Length: 326
Image 1: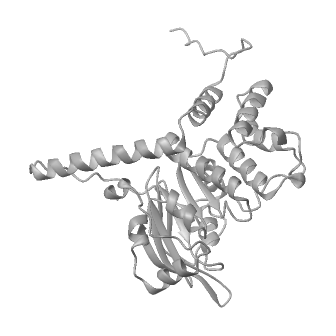
Image 2: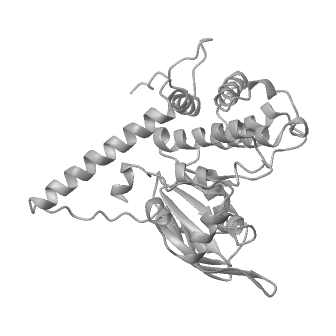
Image 3: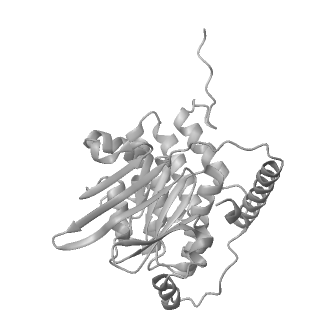
């Protein structure tokens, strides 16, 4: 049986499966459809599904509950440094394609949760599973394998200081192999265009603003084609326009590519816009875990105080029809 013919790039060279896959994802993300249109379509679909489920139940046909283990499962996790308890019996979970926002004041363990998820820190007790794998049972090779599918965007970007922006984004593409240099450069250019930073390709990270570093870090994360991305305070110390761009991109990744996201933030506007689920940490404990609608309506005194102290005096929002399915 003859080998199937691979599609060719514009210069006549055969494209690799990695290039074809990543190019398709970039085409999706750079479609003319606005984020607002995607959100409206998502909410409309949610209402239709909800109505169909309600009608089926009313007709007594019944629908078997699907067995779907969570993609990320953080179960009764505790960790401390010295005499200080950082997380105390904290639990949360989320499925594929969902967005969880972790909220709370500074120093309550939000960023520590992300580092535990990726195996950079080991909890004192509890269990963390990613795609069914017990992170505590994995050796370094196993952890590296998980990190190929679940990546993190750090506050400072965690870019390689001695590499240009283009070389930083090309790094995961070169690690995977199977691409010619001109194919790598084409993908780097597309990724930079996606995050609105094409002009930075030859710059070193030291010459970038905080917001630019975050965008470059997201572009590098996307080059690895992850199933999930963890964001540590993506809008801290960035201007409103950059914050909006980052929020739009996270939302597109969810709605168009089905990427799972965990976003550590203290920005209520950001959380209300993006979140399917919310974890609210207070003094190392999970004060609240549930849907965004439940969080907005929560009467817990600590949650209400957090709302009251938020820099934006926000009215109670309409979190959308999609909450009906939550």
